[in-house]
Length: 348
Image 1 (spheres, rainbow, N blue to C red):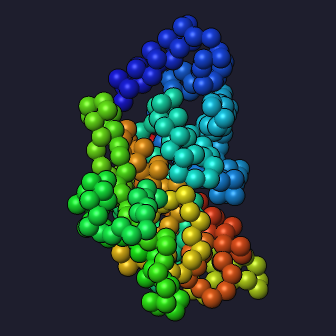
Image 2 (cartoon, rainbow, N blue to C red; image 1 turned 180 degrees about the vertical axis):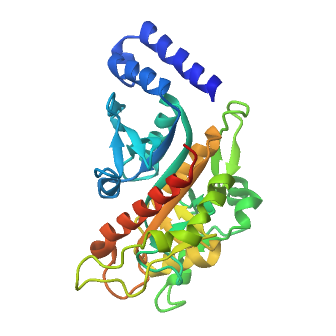
């Protein structure tokens, strides 16, 4: 960590003296602030998707901003400097989507002395045992938005498909749209098939421009093992919210769930058929639009990572309208409560 901090310091100094402000991702004042901030580090990075998920963390008594430099703006993002549970943190909001999440996480790691990343937010449940309000700490994450969409008439044994996807994707299976025609077998579906592909990563300790494939990304084993302490005491010390008011309550008491497989893509999922496909083919229990991007960037940079996601809806699995409309705020609060509890487990 010391060598990483020194490298960052040297890089920032070179940027300051060698380039004009127009060539930099931030102005010189912000870069000087980064140097000062890193001298007081290192920090835990907390990465949050959207404003309504960020809000519950930033309230007084939960987040304590630094009295020296409470925030710094870099590349269109605001990095909040302070403490949560008396641990030094840098909190940043990414915005919606895999692209925003990946860019923001890389910015966080490029500019600041970060020892690990905690990511949190809401998600949709694709597992019948997961209910709205439940908080999940998955063990694995996958990006299920990197597709090879075949032209009509091609199938599993098409030479081009085999060349592009390889045997690895063959083992994962594919989505044949015709399987979902209503009524079943009624007509040929011109949408044909979608094959799933693994993501390409370029680890910082690897050979530049030599890619590796990653579909199943595991969270940091130490973080994950530490999080299991929440299984024993979180519900006694910190009951999760069940009601938004006296008349709107969940049908079951929220719980913390481990040992799951989460997935992310640039898709807001509110469709029962696709929900079932992800659950059946990949054993995926929850879906969102950012976590896998944060996981992949953390993997490439060899930085410890964990994600905590609370269920806001059933991703199209219910007969009524999407539950997030009513319970999104409650789910966000439950996620924050567990995140704070987890951060307390980390050494100061």
